[in-house]
Image (cartoon, rainbow, N blue to C red; front, side, top):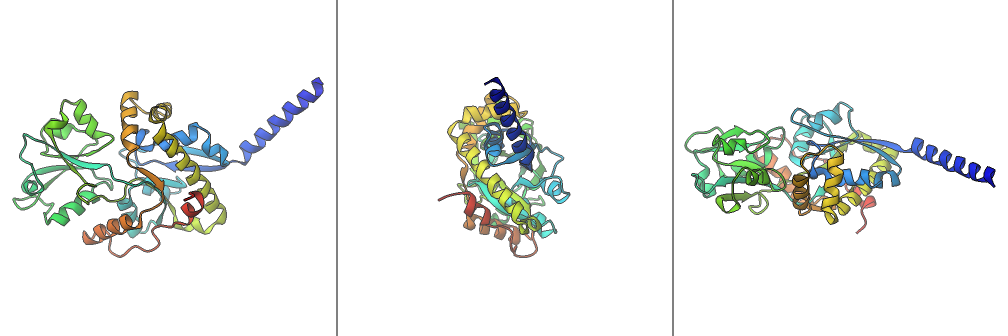
Length: 322
């Protein structure tokens, strides 16, 4: 009997070793540091959803000096999280990125201004300084200003663009009349800095019809010609969206997974996950929003030609059931 038990244990260990050895490796490059913005991926890893799909996923955090588009172009990742505008701009420059899934169905981007400041409406933007993030995050703002007919070169009939840090200090220090925030992050940093909700004027990009697609999953186009890679991405997307569904339903637990992955300030991560949950969809790309995003970039001449082949539904058609 003892020999049988030993034999069974050895067999189980051998099977586990084979499964671990056989797992397909996937490297995911995030757009920013480990935080609730990416909670679904951390949950998928923490809960073993990737492992269940036969995947060994390495999640690489981003940062102010990391451009996911450059990382994947250099072979440093299999799939990246980035905003559609940044992906289309990179594609226009020769980095053939393709959207394979769109976990974020809504935009979390806003511009906030103190009520006691000079900006009350869009008409008040003229002649004032507005804080904007760059590194591909500026495109929705420029599309909005283009829509309003405002120059972004300053002057009485235009706006002055302040290259904003990834925090709320430009508002605290009165370097800008309004600043960019995400509903799930910097807005709450402003509240923590002493601003009250009733003391802020909020311009929400989605409410104004200026929202462009944000966090999506992108791969290099040439990789999709490999059936094995496509199969791996089907499994990756399926597990990732399972992670997102769990994160939306259990935001506090998702925040713990983020903290385990290197996130900072557990209370902030819990609050962030609650707000992020409002933006997550089923992972399928909304073609109308894709077309709006592409048109906005064309109108601004950020991209020089109508993008072709910039997205595929082949992955989500298989990975995500209706």
